[in-house]
Image (cartoon, rainbow, N blue to C red; front, side, top):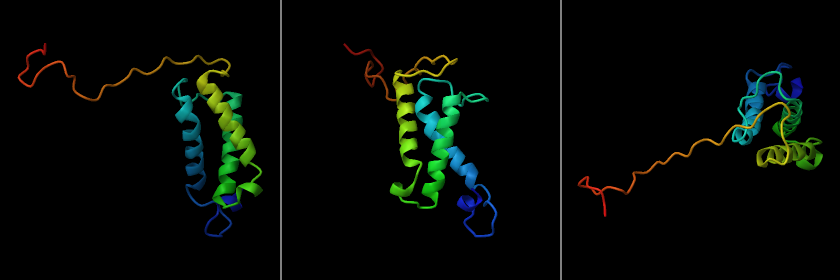
Length: 123
């Protein structure tokens, strides 16, 4: 593990490297799941989320070391984990013990076309 996080060859994890990987993994999970569940998840994480996070972290560590996908043992499990995330988002699977959130309200970001430039209602 240290070797995967040591870019300068001093035998120590370089500052912030693992934190950056962990943040990327959290974004990969929370991004899609945030549309249907309240994120970030409370600790302890749901077991499936914990497993997905471990798999995506391992894949990221190998990718960071520029291991080709055909030699990275975590590519297939990570693909499966992303498929699980997708199934959770579309509702084919559910996180036990958690309730889905209602969809966020839509935000309209352009002016309404119900009044003229003079301020009168349009006919």
